[in-house]
Image (cartoon, rainbow, N blue to C red; front, side, top):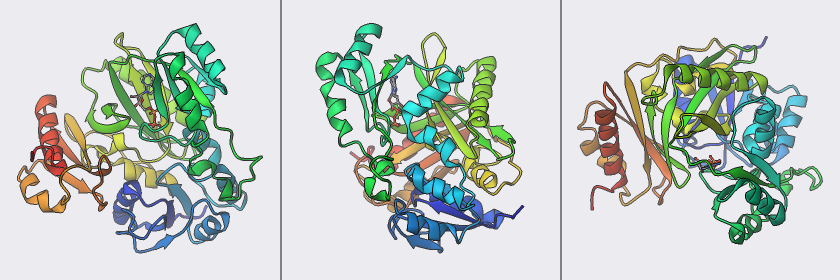
Length: 399
Ligand code: ADP
């Protein structure tokens, strides 16, 4: 077996940046295929090449310089990844697993076949099919483009038949980078994009669980996080999820691990869940890369999600996911009124319990530009400290 020394990361956002940070102590070299020279990760990774990840030749020549390939995002076209695999490149996670994070219809089909709890759902190709589903199960209904959505874009709450036109109108525009026809993917091979209709789940909270799996099947699972999303964007996580019954937590961790096994995921699998008032949980969606809801693990766990992701990609033994404190709260810093994040550090860092991560990105409204993490003994005080710091960095407490 070849030893992985150089990991190629496709994409140059903050996830790649934090992967690079985790690679350093292991002595792993990171090569980056970046969209732009000033990307969050490109700023800190010397072996950066700027290129188009939807171009087969670019990706193939990049991969030739790496021992294994992984991702900062899920948008690399399946056809390109299959060609890499056929050429003997270690693509982790591989295209057959990754499709379940790229295509929500494929994900629903597979998880339902595995008996994993899901909201009632149906693939619809016309407004009439969508309306028939809504009339059957009751309105409102959630509409999602099966591909190309992120951070709540491509998700609609449809109150009734009169609102069905909007998601279907978006279908024509919804071809995300995954599906670009100019990616060398012939139109006939381009994956079909449909509208996934889902029962509206009046959840009481959202949860997330991260599994990390190696090729041979070894896996580890992190404690479950409670996550707060606003407008489809993650704002905060609290780990472990307060008040979650330990038996149910173990059950959720077990089925998340089963999903990772069944889909043969290599690296991080994030399973996003919705919890009903009754306590019952259903799976919302899957991601196969380090995930925003696992950022707490940098300080909060013995081994961070980024390090464990790299260990899995390099096929190394996985590290302990044990928590380092009774509670870890991560609060995202979104672009707001404050343009100068580094300039705010003197005030924010006055709280010595706080860890700050800034991503080197230009501040734009609503954009994820950093996060803060606080470890503590008690939920409310720890959440307070994290919220205060991120509000200050965002500038929402300046007004
Ligand atoms: P994205 O891929 O953009 O993250 P998601 O499928 O995760 O989209 O949906 C974004 C958010 O929409 C979720 O975090 C949740 O708050 C809400 N949502 C998604 N599906 C449902 C559903 N079936 N019922 C109620 N809310 C939902």
